[in-house]
Length: 199
Image (tube, rainbow, N blue to C red; front, side):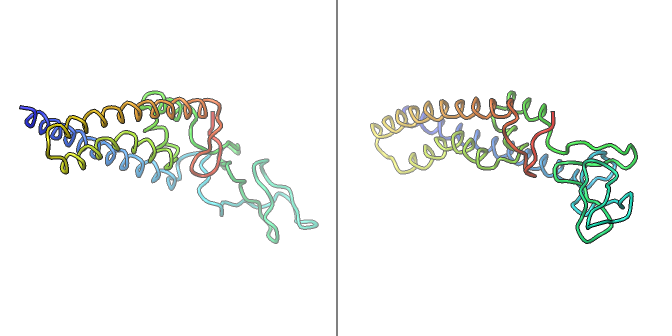
């Protein structure tokens, strides 16, 4: 009976693992779609690339000139200005705006997906990997060690150790969630392009 219960536990953990693989794969596809939007030209304020440049409004004097917008800087040795990092310029409205990840989206993802969505949205892959290890680590360890253990007493001891490990991992997971939530709320974390989030 104990062996059957043990087998059912391993099967349920394996099903959870497959479900999480599907979830991570779906999240990966969503990120690919989000990254593809960087090349879409219809979005205002999106800095398409570092070669986005505009002619100076006057002649170049002493290796400087007047740019058409305050979010631009003169490109030395040329007769044009380029858009500064972390800014975008819309030539139709002639307005500058900060270009970065949305602070509100990052905050909502961090609150409602408990670190998984927030870290993926901001492409903080180190934190994302840490969270995934805390979620799946005990499950992988149980599946691996469960194949090596034969005696009933050893299986019960292994289950006890894994439950304690799961409790510690859950505690660490929520510590990371709260820490990153505070960092995002204070806008103290940068996006993948090195720019601060835009409120």
